[in-house]
Length: 77
Image (cartoon, rainbow, N blue to C red; front, side):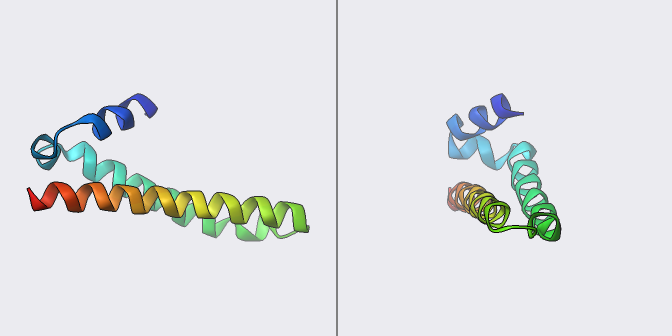
């Protein structure tokens, strides 16, 4: 999967418009973020776990925002 993500980032915008894998990557990032938020109770046991959960949640949000920006840029072209 990581290799596929790297390939998507390196694609030209015009090619990304026609590649459904870009939409799949964005959908997957959103699903991962949602699943992570659902797991919050499991990580709320102590402050260290809570901090780790929060940091990972931020990374998941950044991933979604990055894919949204790539999709938006490809739609402009």
